[in-house]
Image (cartoon, rainbow, N blue to C red; front, side, top):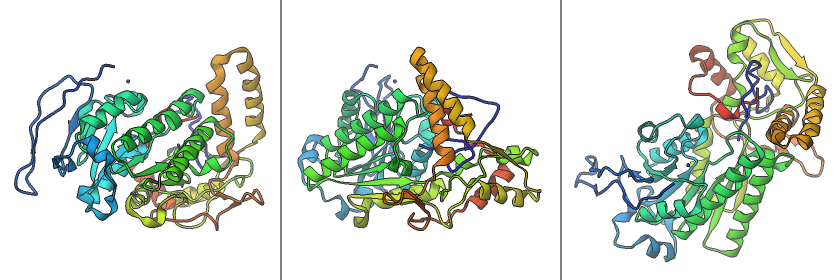
Length: 420
């Protein structure tokens, strides 16, 4: 999850405070007809009001074999010996901010991608089915509900093919207490159970580098699932995992670009050096996650990852922005104690008004990202290390800022992940 405050994983939007899925039909969009040409494929659909629909643009289904999904699930897996087009990759969280990039990257690499999506996806469910199909074009789109295990299992069973790999890009929409456990733990666990039931031999999990120091509910939820995923691999030698823990995403650092462009000061906590991160672009992270599908080097490993170059503090991020604008730096330094006071008040009020539970959690999230670095944490010294944090990719924050200055933040909306 990436959230926003002007530190290593936040951007402040001062004037807004945003606080903070049925009946299943066994009918499908079918039949799927594949022409003899590898470049000319057609899909005929049977209109159906079913909860789950299976749509394909690129059709290389392993389902073409006579084996049923249940038979496939019991067969030993050797998916790494197959060509990408014969590897079925189930992606959950496919319409999320990172999930969309992951689907595109997997499709580009030739995998047979099955993207699980809600019937209404996107920020606050604003995208229709057709919009989702268009957004995930090239993938096979499966409309289902990851928060309901029975529904998800029926959906996967209805595909008529086995699953080789599950890639989870699920993340809580806002970091609230209940939503964190519902998505970061329960829905992700459902994806593991459903995937393994139908043959998945590898699970790629998008986690977060901040779980190293778990003070927040979404971090605890992620860690609980990580532990269960590791245990599953320990108990079954034919099953493996890759846990990806990225640092801050570019979009979570871009919320102040347009404000500064309009003459506003760059807001940061303390002296702007309380924390640092190695920001990473979404395409670079998607590429790293796609690497995890086949890479033997990434099997059964926890993989912290950052972008290229040195770690950047909020102060340095602001300086880059002012330099690009050709303006004299103008910073607004906010004492971190202000957040400590607000959290104290909210913690007191939540004892009287339980409904404020999420508000109190949001305050803690803001405080965490304002003061904690998104880098490898040395457990012995308690210090964050830029040198020990691996780098990957080629996209830089400066290039991202340049693009936002030209084109704005369209498509980079934080939605329910915005704190202020």
